[in-house]
Length: 407
Image (cartoon, rainbow, N blue to C red; front, top):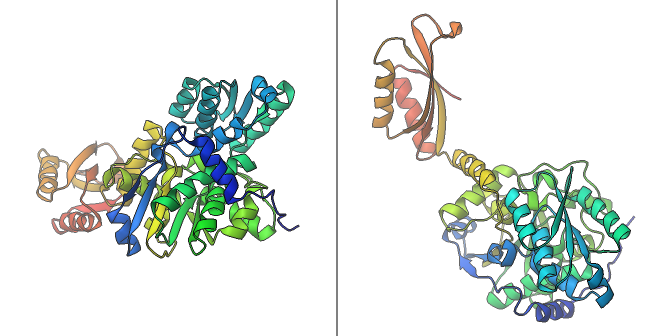
């Protein structure tokens, strides 16, 4: 079965959506990134959509869809499903237009996203499962209660609204040769591709998916949207099992390439943005930069990377910073055996201080029989200065006679 042609969404539809959004959606900044430019070998700009109202691009599509409802539909209210960003977009869009909203969210949705959705006035209901399962529940609720379902990506109004980001980017940087865009269900990249392809026909458009939720490649191969059995990625905002019926044809026809990025590279992207650009971006929002970091794509510059969202759970951020620092060679865990006598541990710690390795934690084990008579095992977590420094520390300890293993 071939992918059918969707209801036509044109650049004029995107321009009409931009008029609706005037005074509602912010014109988000476009910033230089020296580090990303170094990776790409030419100028790379960061489109900071994580600074949008509600912390992501989703307000663009949600507001556009709700603004086009009939008076009767607005009185009945709306229902939506989301891991968080679309939830907040729908909640605020509904509040601004005095429409009642209910949002179905995964039970493991980040708490800040849940709290923000409620703060914008929406009722939140939880579902065990992924976003796709929430969509099913939301549709059933909408049919039973007479509510209009506002989909996260698969509707012409949603696609047109998200496409306003593309128009905005084209106006800010008409010299672009490449743009990298995150993909979940495909609403953002479909809308941006429609808009940018119309005004910048030679632009190279690259989509970026999470390795644990990579539904686009098998769907394009099959010629129709294919549903993954499961999704597993830290990029919860794009953890979608199936692309849209409407969005997939636009990806097929207008997007030049779709690449996949693993969670390790995504974590490094979050850390890089936090450390170098002073930007707090969630995993799904940073994944397009992860494609540059992982080296899975070659681009022509000037290029832009869309940072699509910034709503991250602080607990997840802490874990990601630790993972990112480990990937960057900033942490080292070692096991060492030392003589079981007073002063041995102090001698080891002093040696590490001389090697400029900062000790984070120490575990001292004396009662494990397999360690050897007269010996103790020490497990140390160290802050280091990068991969080269790790090698220097391990080699220096071994040269001093310590039995050292990296854990």
